[in-house]
Amino acid sequence: MKEFDLVVIGAGSGLNVATKAAAAGLKTAIVEEGPMGGTCLNRGCIPSKIILHSADVAETTDGAPRFGIVPKGYSVDFAKVTRRASAAADRESREIEEGIKDTENLTLFKSRARFIGERAIVAGTETIRGKKVVVAAGTRPAIPAIDGINGVKYMTSDEALRLRKQPKSVVILGGGFIAAEMAHFFGALGTKVIIVQRSMMLRNEDREITDAYVKAVRKKYTVIPGYEPKSVSRKGGKIVLVVKNEAGAKTITADSFLVATGRVPNSDVLDVAKAGIEVDNRGYIRTNDYLETSEKRLGLW
Image (cartoon, rainbow, N blue to C red; front, top):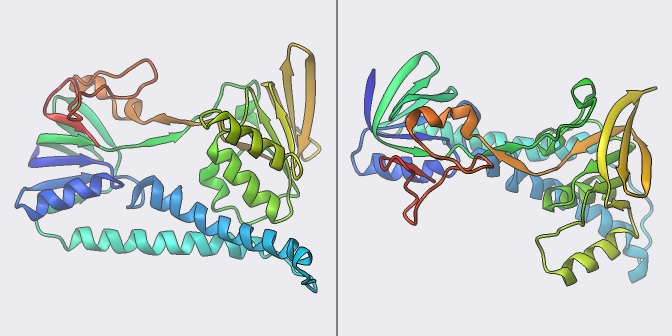
């Protein structure tokens, strides 16, 4: 078993801890199965804002006649939009990995981490232990238990950011900020957008903001609030989503299906219970004011 002063699980925000520890002379390990940079760089903030900029440009062009400018027309190279975002993220991720490999006191294990005991971790074919361990493994898209969902091809924001073919229509399940961003991305580039949400959109925002957003969005897309998804299937090349509320059922058809119903923590994948780490009823790791877990030598970042 390889011993380290510090083991950091996750190469997103965890990199901040790992690099500072290594710079201070601590023998440090980073365990990350995916590309370096975490959700923000690879599946979140950075690529999403790059593709949203393209959507903003398209929307500005469409609105140009209001300013006395009439465009001669344009076409959308959808694959180029997403390739541009992916290329930027992938390049930076590779540079981070090269930097890790060249950093003294820092060892990278490119594999999934799994606890097998207090501060003991299996990383691929290696077993390692840290005097202290930082869990910075983040979250993944939540997939609701809908009848038939395992039998259809759906996407989450992870796949949407790297999609190469623009769908003619998409039904988006969810009403949070991810759903809102994806609706703008697809809709501004010409895809017909249908949003289904069981309550209200952007429900964590002030009600004035929510109302103003929904009013604006309904001028561009179809918004169906207050419905629960019951089943999904594919018929004749189309996604068929059945949703219900107390008033009855609706059937929605579209070319593509995007699930944006929030995110869940990766604590189950890590098997944190074997390390003595307590989680709440949603799977999030319990910590004190100092981000210490129930096992004090295991922290959360």
